[in-house]
Length: 538
Image 1 (cartoon, rainbow, N blue to C red):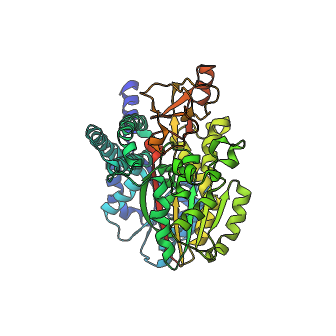
Image 2: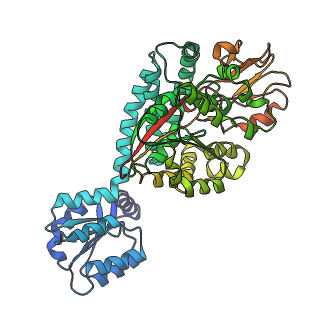
Image 3: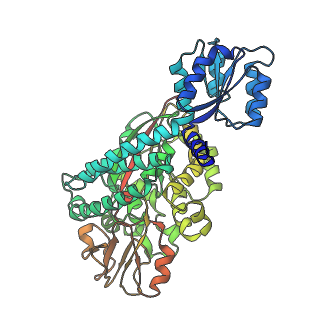
């Protein structure tokens, strides 16, 4: 055989090899039929007749999987397992045993044993174990790829037909589901396809909102729940029950971020998930004030002018929503609900105060209603724009979800939810005021120097922008927005656009490109979860 022929054969052998296996058993000759079958299926299989030889083998050669007999003379299976795991903690080990004791199952569940098979093993069991540990990722990826290809075509067909508000919720949740699935399979290279399809979907969604929104705020029968109806729909009904209600509002929480958090709560709560649409602009002064007041911004300004400060105040961070407690009290009063003790309101703006609230959370269960606003996710979105290190940590949406995951697992919010799950007389409603969208395209805007500085919406005089990239609100009263003077107009950005003034246009275009912003129209900002949590163990 020539050198080139030999190298070609060697390359083919390496490509065909599905994984390297070590099978350890003191009666290894009796297992030859199984070993031959695995070799025929493309696996590279070595054998060892005792624990010491097995340990020497794993030291000398990298293996992908070990089959390990439990009962062997000399160094037994469990003793050998301990040494192998000390050397290579991530190496999967399948124990083969005659023992069906519960303790062995617990060992497997505990993670030292990856799986176990009961003697006598049959070929299908062995082959299944190999596929699970050596080809599982590839097989799952192939299935995900096939499923997404079908779903991509189905979503494309949906976008060609008219949809109502509930169908848009269904479409958005499907796409988020694929976000989560493709995060697990980056090797498939399908994320770009999904991003492009979401952009197409958001373009259609903005057309839908532009057609329908005015009828929604004017009370159309066929409309989604809006921000000002959240408390009436999801919180107040539970105040008639013999429970302590905790109402959590996590500022700027997108549905995909909720899905990242949700998986940690299944062991503690049963969950009932609903959705509502944020009002426009999808920003804290409007959307969250609408939640706590039960009013549209124009109604709030007219009814309680002393509580409507919005962005006219000097200190933006503390003034936008500093009267939420009073607004909620007035909403309950209008509904003729008088609580004793009175409703508790807490706003968590930093980790230190969050820890204090966490330590005292059970003491609030004596209240009929406790509202807690958590600001961290909003700070995360803004911080990613302002601090290059955060953008380095979370350069794209999968990484942004991962950062949310890391925060939540170590957050006071998670600790509070864990603590409250032990109480049987607790009901938790968790929601958000708006989401955020990753802004990738600049939209040139013209306005006077008094116009607001927000990137996804603006109010002021003589505002001008491309109507393909923004909604122009000529008469704010039609949208139930504060007028702020006789010539005030609003513009609200569509899709993933952000506003940039002509002055130093390229500087600010580059500065805010690829930042997470809110205030405009997109599925991510407007379609929001409301989750009712009932403790399982209480």
